Image (cartoon, rainbow, N blue to C red; front, side, top):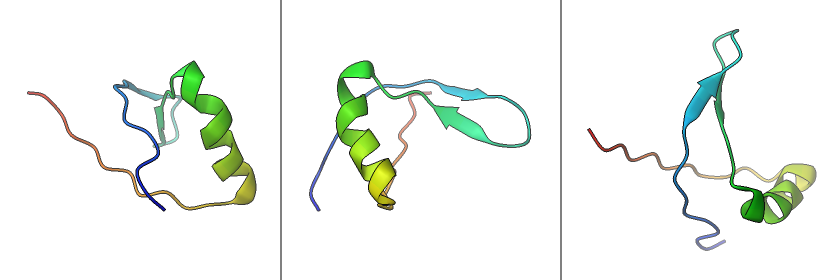
Length: 49
């Protein structure tokens, strides 16, 4: 599998210790396919200080 998406996002939380990354709407259909197939993704997070 190659590079699928690069985007900027904010982290959010609804409690319970889990963090949420909001996916841009234009990427949701492709990434939903991976979710439905149970594919594990490698996530790299870079932050600007």
